[in-house]
Image (cartoon, rainbow, N blue to C red):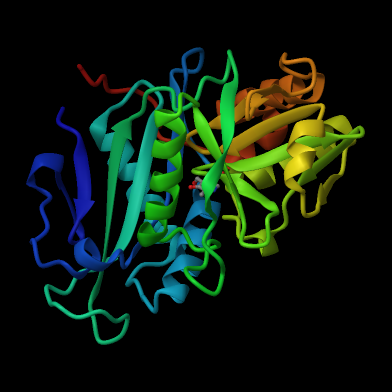
Length: 313
Ligand SMILES: Cc1ncc(COP(=O)(O)O)c(C=O)c1O
């Protein structure tokens, strides 16, 4: 079975889904997207899409920022997603990428008087960060874009130049990931992850006003910490020096899952090992996304009804 795309209102083999070289979004970064995980549960022979509705709710917010209107409801986009993954027949973890983009083939920087289109593709994804061994980070020399520049609360393709600059700088300096500060020097987020701290026994994460993307995984972890560990998360600005004083630090993201940060700017985080709170939240999170925790099954959409078709790779 070839992988499929949902493109121009229909399903087609991925290799046939092509856009023209004049497409507005390609030139000006005028698109917004989502990253949704499908998590394979081997015992149940089932693939679970995680919080797919919440991802589409965020996509529609990003669309509003970019003055885009899509011809589909959230229910329809959820249905297309489910159908696309099912058609492709995956029996492993997958990453789904819906994209809403300015599709007019025209030159000229603007948001208005342009056509919009929507597509979905699905791929397999190798481990993004090492969730077992933890990650080594640096504070980036690049600052997070401000809401008055390109609003970080929208998942807008053009913004990812900011993330790419920071990620490549970090990798070229020998680190796994970058931590970006915002314009006034507070900690914002990783290049593709939200960040949490255990500071003086409190769970802390930067607020949306510090130019973060409001992550679906961030919300998941806030709820798991509250419901399962009895820990409220404080949404507060964090200073750079607090990165060095935290007992535990971890990233959250659809691609990154819950990834422990064990070193920042060559300083060990806490005792340099994965902390208790991080470990517990990671364990809860992995069970939840694979549909193994009945209490949170409402976040998981099964792709297959009965017989699972096999995708040969
Ligand atoms: C910049 C940025 N921050 C945070 C996140 C985490 O968001 P989510 O948990 O919804 O994947 C992502 C990933 O989508 C991201 O790209």
